[in-house]
Structure formats: structure tokens, C-alpha cells
Length: 196
Image (cartoon, rainbow, N blue to C red):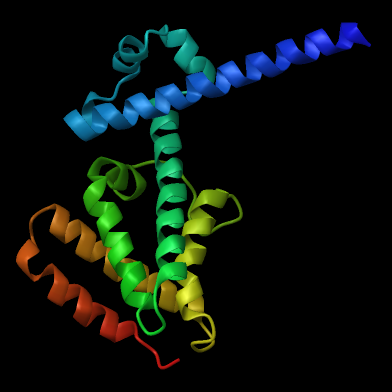
């Protein structure tokens, strides 16, 4: 009995170590991107940053794109949690506004992460059978706003998401003046406010 316990503990420790290394790689990629932009996130740079050889990094991710996709997927989990929190804490009649504000605050507070999620050319499937659960979770938080609002809540959710993304991106690239953001969000939310 003891002879099987030791190999199990060793296997568990190796798995934990692997998960820690994977998290370090993702964290380093995010840190570099936030400070210097995504072009500076290379396997060589990550290897230097976390003091692991490039083959170790390739043991976790097949390519640089794999690392960036992992960052993006992590971002979808984070935005999903932020939207869920905003939705659950909002007062009745203010839920759509709370979710819209949380979305835009996420985009503003983590611009490189948001860019990885929506602007980098990554092969993460959206809206099909292979869509990662983190993306489904984030979309579900938006769709929850429109359940019972007609026969196509998915389409309404897509339009809401597209509008938020447009505001976020145009604000990030300084096409929209920040001074009107509050007014912009208020008017946008009114377009999607349905009587309870």
C-alpha cells in the first residue's frame, strides 16, 4: 500500500509543478505585453524572464500562439467573472448599465489582455462546438441580461457585445474622447434597456 502512495505523491507533485510553470509562463507573457506590447512577447524573451529553457516552454505550449491563446482564454474567464459580479450586485433597473460599465472598465484596466482576447489573430474558436468553456461563460454573463427578451436573445447579446467592444476599442485607440464616456455609456445602455 505504501509503495503506491509514494508514486502517487510524486505524480501529484510533478503535476503541481507543471501547473505552476504554466501559470508563470502566462503571467510573464501578460506582464511583458502590458509593459511593452505583444510583439515583445517571444518564446526567447519568456524563457529569459522566467529562467526556463525554451524547450521547457515548448513542453507546455506548442508555439508562441499557444501561449497567447492561453492568455486570451484566461482573460475571458476574468471578464466573465467581472460581468457576473456586476450583474449579481447591481440594483434592479441598473443591471445592464452595471454590466456595460464592468465590461468597459475591464477593457480599460487591462488593455494588452483585452487586445489578446479580441484583436490578435489567434485560432480560438468562437460560437462553435470547440469554443472553450471560458468564452462560453463570459458570453453567458452577457446573454443573461436578455433572457426572456424575445425569441433571439443570442442575437441581442451579440449586438450588445459588439457595441461594447466598439466603445472599448474606439476609446482605447483614442478615437472617442474619454470626457464623454459616461454620457456614451448611458445612451448606449438606454438602447438595450427593456422593461422588467
